[in-house]
Amino acid sequence: MNVSVFGLGYVGCVTAACLARDGHRVAGVDINAEKIAMVNAGSSPIIEPGLADLVARVVRQGRLSATDSAEEGIADADIALICVGTPDLGHGQPDYDGLARVASAIGAACESRTRPLTVVLRSTVLPGTTERVLARVLSECSGGGRMAEPLSIAVNPEFMREGSSIEDFDNPPFLLVGTDDLNTATQLRQLYAGISAPFLQTSVRTAEMVKYVCNAFHALKITFTNEIADLCDALGADAQDVMRVFRQDKKLNIAPAYLKPGFAFGGSCLPKDIRALLCSARIYDVSTPVLSAVVQSNKAQITHGVDAVLNTRKKKIGVVGLAFKSNTDDLRESPMVTLVETLIGKGCDVKIYDPNVVMARLKGANRAYIEEEIPHVSSLLCDTPECIVEHAEVLVLGGAGPEAAKVLSAARADQV
Figure 1: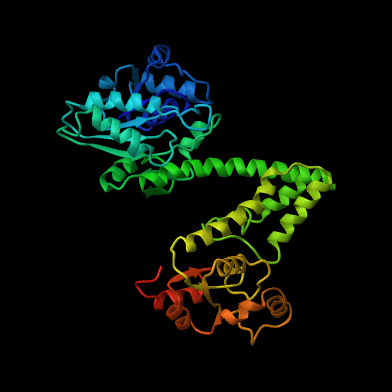
Figure 2: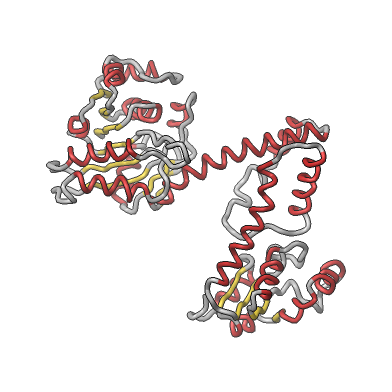
């Protein structure tokens, strides 16, 4: 394919060189005259392992060139990749001026274009930016959509790290393309045909958000590990050994487990163990802002759930699942119990269905917990899914177990 790459920084230069290596004819576009001269001379404008030799080779082979002209850059292009930076303005808000300038240049260059062009955003942007900035500016600057061939737009985040960019380009975790157009997705699949990685097509906003989620999680992992190391030092444990063993758990720790959106955590282990670590941190004067935020964030999820119910402005509430998770009768520190008690306090008429929490069958600690801590809840328990469905205007699912499926299958169309 003929490809233009706008922005010859770390992402753009590596992307351009790797695509040229893979057989595409690539034109790099940048406003920096020094970068343009270096690329055209076969030199890399950035320091990156392996890139200098790669740029020299593909320029020598005639597959990579550079220009400051958007019109020249897209003259023969099938795809235009935007790889400009989106730096922090100083208060957290990304600066999209560079993106807008590139979109304006591409749009103006396309005004008289008679062949299709797919514009692909590789830059890191918040959800909604492609529509609000890129698509709008392209349309305004290309004659308001009066071109003979309309532009196609997609988001294709990069997952490259400085210092290993070529390796990361060749071996990404996946190839992510945000577009609703199958032809555009197929075109990008062909662009990256030389890369063996799962090809994931999503909505534009999902693709925009995934990059931020990945980076936030990476930052969280680093900070979490460092806080644990500080605690280990204070408690006399070997932090390196602790984390070495921690990483061996591929079932729960280094795994997809617990990474699906849902409700707050509870039960007999997680809350008390977090509190124990935080107590130790206070005793030994160890700063643990990330761990400390876990408890507050978890409480906020319960508050969010309560607000979601109250915002329906309906009073008859059916709660499915009272235990802290499906397939258990353990009510200790269950967030669903907190939610139910809060709703009752707000004047809601609550009924509960949880086949695992039946007073006649409960024994030991669970029965004592209800009788001593939440005796009023026992009178709210229903024996059948039909009872809940008949009562409720709003159904609240505390899990995805079989009891939830039974209630949903019997739910009425007028229920929230």
